[in-house]
Length: 242
Image (cartoon, rainbow, N blue to C red; front, side, top):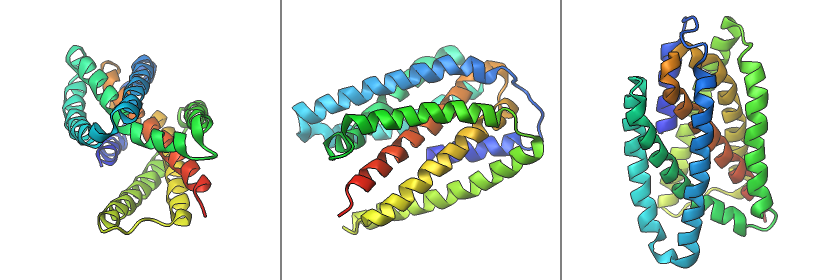
């Protein structure tokens, strides 16, 4: 939900604007990398809790999830004001919490035959390859193509959110997504966030000034974390089919 809100807000701000932050992405990249490293640390910590004391994991998971959602809006508001000295430690905590909430999915992946540590590595490598390709494509989009792609991805994002909310509601009533449908949803998610990664390189320099690099880093961080999640979900779904 937070990802969708952040993305649609960026689209609205970027429409029909020239570059306002030509160096915002290069400025953001070290902080994006640092955030992903902290996420890995948080995931490692979550896996440690799952293995040593699984009984408390769900409680700590929900606490971390709530704190993560609150921090997202706090960090975004502070970072958009370019108050980077305040936003940076909060972004670091957010990244750790995000890693902790990811640990459950990673745990399932590690325990799924055919996925395991190799699948986690493939998901991470897929994000890296996507970044390289997206940077080359997104940085060279024309205004017309950039806006067209942005609107298309925005509409697809709304559709994905609706499907995920539907999945959540059905699961609360004990109705779970069949594996073939999970493959389709996860594949669509991978395709969509690959598109979002291209859009980032078009939209962020038109949305944020150079000194708002933490806002850009947060936006890109959300893109690649979600891409990682959907690649991993896809691998799990493929290898879990009856």
